[in-house]
Length: 190
Image 1 (tube, helix red, strand yellow):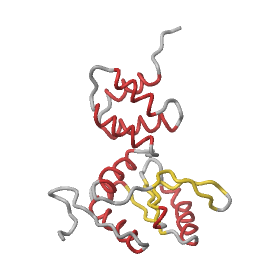
Image 2 (cartoon, one colour):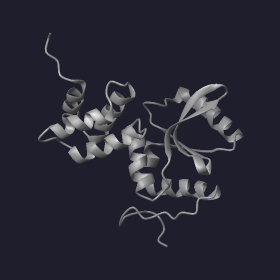
Image 3 (cartoon, one colour):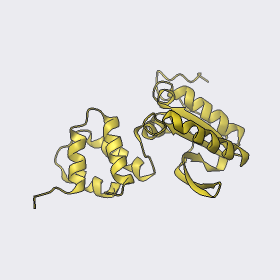
Image 4 (cartoon, one colour):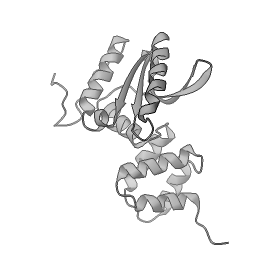
């Protein structure tokens, strides 16, 4: 006592009241990162509800969270940059050792030695830039190319961002072709 709801039900209730879908992704990712629940349990609870706002988008986001998406920015990168433009699938939250410490890279294209770090303002305040620079420099010394993008590059210029990532991948052996994300795609027509 007092009566309580299951964690999954509470998270889905909060998702229904969210102002936008980025808030829903943040909620799902944070709950799973903290190991309060798991994507499969959230999916089961979602499927048990007769109606749910954003049902299909939540299902897709849960798959992405299970693959390592930790934030709305990472979700938008996966959806609007990587998938939409046909970039190869990357590892998410890829563990590495740097200076004797375990670190996690947001997006790693292992085969091509390219890393993408996604810096949302909430998770990468200005005082973290020095640490980010050290990580990037150490990665460069190991032969990795690090590309760093913020909210604007992913949400307002996803096509240009995809072209930059593709150029880095091609410089390291990727032979794939970018595809246009839709009729208003800003990639040059081929």
